Image (cartoon, rainbow, N blue to C red; front, side, top):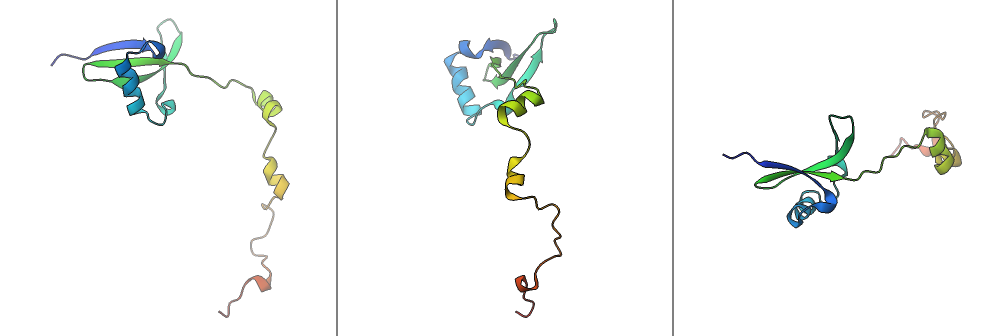
Length: 107
């Protein structure tokens, strides 16, 4: 058996059959399949794998990395869990403190 040919290609330069295979293999997106590939010189790129009958492709994909600091994120999107304070926190409530009219044991 002849070993598969292995190629590295950019997503924008993929042959039509590889693009079709990506659509079939990752119908809901390939976000969970992306891997970081490190080069010997320390650089890196992100890629997904596509195996066809005679060629195994490593397809380079663009990945947007969220590199905001926590402070920048809070400034841009707001801080903390505001919905909990908006509706009142229930963490200090006593679960055994139920009004007797709420429970009927005679039924």
